[in-house]
Image 1 (cartoon, rainbow, N blue to C red):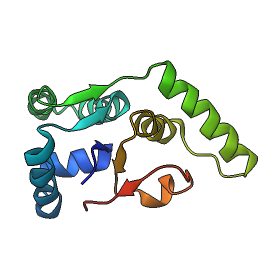
Image 2: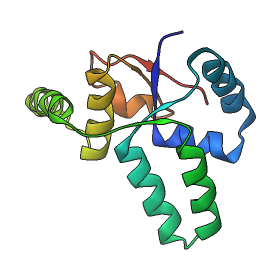
Image 3: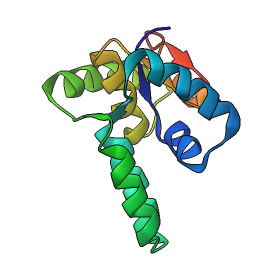
Length: 133
C-alpha cells in the first residue's frame, strides 16, 4: 500500500461511515496514522456543509480534520497543474479546476489519489488512482 491523497468523495463516505470505505480507511490509518487531504477537499466539504447549514456536522468534520494532514496549494502544485491542464487542453480533454488542483496535489507529493471519480481523473496519465468505494 502506497501513501495516498484522499479525495472529497471518499472522505465524505468515510465521515458517513460507508462500510467498504471504512474498512480500507482503517487499514490505511493503521499503516500511515493519518490521511493526506487537499485544501481543496476542505473547501469543498465546508462549502457543502455551510450551504446546507449543517453546523453540527461541520464541528464533527473539523474535529476529524484536525487528525489529518491537509496539503495546501503551493508553487509545486500550481506548476504541475499548469503543465497538466496545458496537456489536457491540447488533447481536448480539460478538467474542472477543483479536480485539477486535487490531482496536482497528489502528483506533487507522489501520492496515489483515492477517489470514486476514476473517470474524471483517468485523463491524467501520470496519476495513480484507487477507489475504496
